[in-house]
Image (cartoon, rainbow, N blue to C red; front, side, top):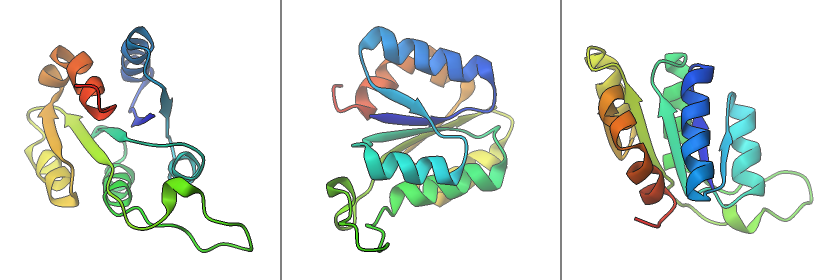
Length: 134
């Protein structure tokens, strides 16, 4: 499954629409709690982060995806998808003029950081790679 943080409905619709056409499961994450829930109940293979979302949230999601560990909570067994350390592939995108944000995403551990235009032009390929099909 691919999780995505989008700053607005336009990007959310675009990402979800292309994923649906490709037959790829794709779900939004608008908060850290939503990301934790997805990590706990789904085989998250990739994360798309729109850098026009609140900066601290975007960077926190990147860092969390790159350092995913099993939570120790209650008496429940951790979900098998969270056993041991793992790294989820992260693609971040934002305005080409937002150089500091693009660099901050790289510094946080994003695997690929690209301007919005390149992301939009290659969205299908990006999603396929995140899903492990490209």
